[in-house]
Length: 376
Image (tube, rainbow, N blue to C red; front, side, top):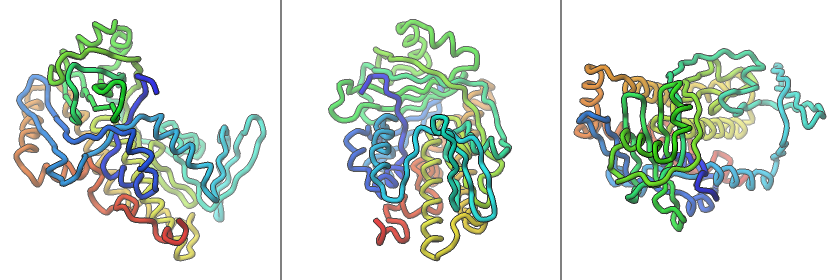
C-alpha cells in the first residue's frame, strides 16, 4: 500500500453487486464508507446535504483503492471454472459472423484465434474492439482536465464526501482511509481545471498547490496539510453510437466514458455487467443462443434508461456548474437549495447516485442469477 494509491467511489448498488458475487467480505475491511455527501457552489448560497440515515442504509457508497479491487479480481479469476485467463495479449482483428464472433489475438508474437457465441468488449474508453469494428462515437470535450491526488486535511472527514463547484470546474474530496489506516484523514482529490492549466497546477510546489486548492475548496476540513503524487487526464464524454450487434456487446467505458463529476462512471459500467449477466443467465436457462440479436437487444433495451439518466445527469452537472454566468449561477443555486428542501426530488437524485433507481438486475438486489442457485 502507498499513500498515492488511486481510489474509486463504489455506489451502494455496486457494493450489493460485489456482495452477490461473494467478494464483499474481502473488500469490506479495505473500504472507507461515505455516510454523507456535502454539495456546495463556491461563492454562492446553494448547499445540499445527502445523508445515508435518510435512506435507511449504513452508507451511500464506499471509497476503495483501485489496487484493492484489481488484486481481488486478479486473484479470483484464475480459480473460476470455465474461465481461461489469457494475459498478456492484444486483439489485432475482430470478425462477427452469423454463428459466432472470432478474435485474432497476439500473445507475445504468437497469433491465435478465439471463437465464441458472444464477444463482450470491456476494453476501456479507447476500446480496440470498438475501433476495429469501426463503431462510431459521439463525443464532447469539456475543455477540462482532472487533476487527481491524495490529500490529508487538518480535520477528519468523518465519512463525508465533498463536491464543491467552482467557476473552473468541480472539486471533489472523498474519504479514503479504511479502518486501521496509517493515514486516517487521507482523502482522494479530483480537481477539474481548465484545459491548458493542468501543467501549471501539476508542477506547483506542494505548498502552492495546497494553497490554491484551499482557496477553491474552502476550510470545511480545516487546513489542507499534505498532498501526494499528482496525475492528470482530459475530461470528455464519449458514447458509442452502437453498443450491440449480433454476437457483440460493448460495456463499461467502451460504451460510455463520463465526466467524473458525481463519481458515476465505474458504477454505470458495473451495472452494465450485472444486467448483461442477468440477461445471459436467463437466455442460458431457456436454452437460447446468447449471441443472437434478440438476446443482446434485451440487454440494450434494459440499459437504455439508466445510461441516459446517468449520462444526462453528469453531463448537465459538468456544464451547468462550470460556467461563471450570473443567471446560470443563480439557477443552479436555486436547484441546490430546492434539492435540500424538496424531499421527493432529493430522494430521486439520491437513489440514482446510489445505483438503486429503475429496474435493478438480480445482482444489485442481492440475489443470485437465474440458474446461479444450481451453478454457484
